[in-house]
Length: 160
Image 1 (cartoon, rainbow, N blue to C red):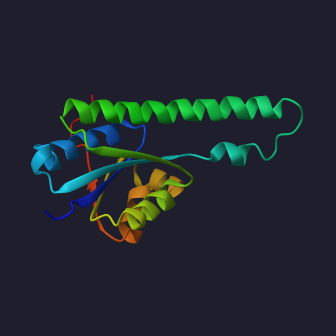
Image 2: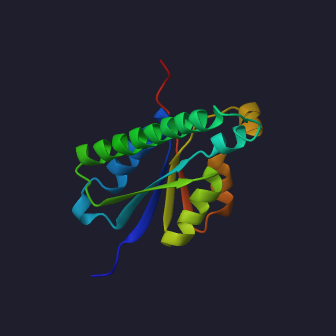
């Protein structure tokens, strides 16, 4: 039997991302034993605290940085745990979870390369043109730079 192709799912803490993960599990892993993909879920944790700490000095700096790092770790753990629960509820157990620190765009493109992924799947935040221009679009960057097919799952459910 040939080795399964790698599907990387890039996750963040948004509802859009978890909707996209559920959609992916339903469509590509509906029958986990016959899925043609090995699922790798990656999460890029922000290193923004390092940037904001540059201007800080004094004896309280270490305490503040420790609190920020603890908060970030707690948020990352929550995202990964929620992803694990969703995978388990869908009967998908052969999943690897990877967390990297840095800019999500570069992390995702590098993971595709490292894993030799066939498909990258991610959710769409549905930002408008202005917000996308200011914040940048991770999915847009990945669709242009990842060396594999990229699927962006949109949540078309009406907003409440």
